[in-house]
Length: 495
Image 1 (cartoon, rainbow, N blue to C red):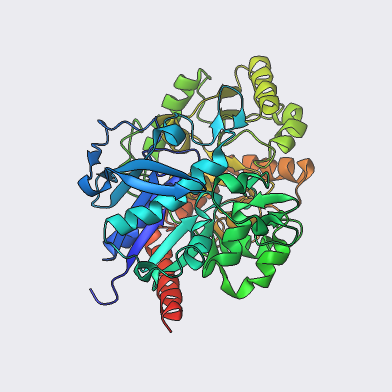
Image 2: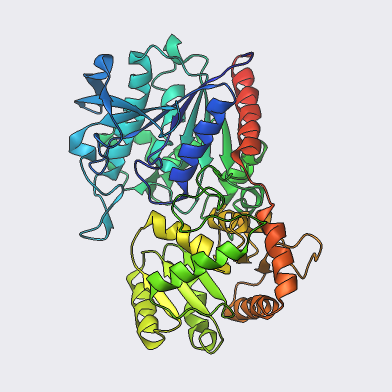
C-alpha cells in the first residue's frame, strides 16, 4: 500500500499476555487496527514469568538468541521470542531476561505491596533491548510508539546515544501518556546503573523532577510528539489541578500534544458475540440481557428481582476511582432499593470498607476482590448501570463497554468520561448516561438518584438503552488519527 508505515509499538503490558489496566487493552487493539489498515506494525514487551510460552505458542527467533544490551558498566545477554496477538497476524516480540522479568508481577511485588526496587533498571533495560532488537531484525521503524514511563527513555536515547547510527536516522518517536499519575520517578543515583549521564538529574536537568529522576519527564521533553488518551484529558493535564507537576512542561509542548480518544475492540466487547456471557443479545432482543442479570446475581449470591436496579463497578479500589465518595455515601446508598456488584483490587482501606459493607448488606452488595476477565464481561452484561465516579479519568474504557452492553454509565464529567457519556438531562435527544460536575458526595448521590428514578420508567429507560448500544467507539477512527499523527511527525523528521 502507498504510505505504508513500519511501526514499532512498545508497551510494558499487552492483552492477553499481561495486563494490569487499560494500557494492555490499547496495546493489543490499536496495533491490530493499524495492521488491518495495511501498516507493518510489530509489538515488543517484556517476557514476564506469568506469560505461558505453551499457551501463546512463543517461538525462538534464531537471530535474537543472544541479545547484547549494554547498560552502564554492565553488559546483559538476553534473548527474545516471538508470537502473535491471538486471532491476528500482529507479531509480538517478548524480551526475555530472567534477572529482571522472571516474576509473575509486573511492577509491584504483591508480597510486599511495594514497587520492585529495581524497576528503573528493569525498564531502562527494556528500552535499550527494544532498540537493539530492531537492529538485529534489520527492521528500520519509521515510528516508535512509546507508551507511558516504562518506555519513555526511547526518545532521549535515539536523540543522544543513537544519534550517529544511520539505522535510526529517519525514525520518529511518539509518546502516549495513558495516566500522568504514573511517572517513573526514582532516586537520582539510580541513573548511574542505567547508564545515563548524571547531568540529567542535576537541578533543572532534563530528567530532574522535584529532586528525583523522572523517566516520563525525559520522554515528554524528548519525543517528537505526545498524545494522551482523550481530548479532554489533553487539556486537563496542562492545568495545575490535573497536571501532577507536569502542567508547565506539557503547556510548553502544547503544539506537540494531542488527545486521541481510545477505542473499543468490538471483537471482544460486544454482547451479540461475547463468548464469556451466558446469553448473547442485541439491541433488538434486550429481554435476553435480563438472563445475564439473573446469572450475575446468582454468581454474586444476591436475590434476583427484575425491578431492582443493579449497579456494576470494575475498578482499582483507589481514591482516584472515586471510592472516597463511595465511602461517604455508603449508608445513604443502601437505603435505596438498589444492588451493587464490585470487582477489583487495590487500597486495603477501601477493600476493608467494602468487605464490611458487604457483610452488613449481604442482600445488596457483592464484592469480588480479584482480577477476573470473565466476571468483568458478565458484570457489563448483567447490570443495569455502571458507576465510574473517578476523581480524574484519562480515558476510561468501561464506560464505553457499558454503552455497547446497554448498561447506562453514571460518571464524573471529567477526562475521557466527559468525551464519551452525554447526560440525559443536559441533552434528552442524545443523552446516553448520567454525569455530575462537582466532585463531591452530594453530587454523586443526586446523580445516582436520577438514574434510579429513570430506571422506574420502563419506556424511557429502554429508549436510552437502545441509543447507548448504537454508539460506536471502534478503534477504526482512533487508528486513523494515529496514522495521520505518525505521517506528520515522520515527514517532519525527514525534512
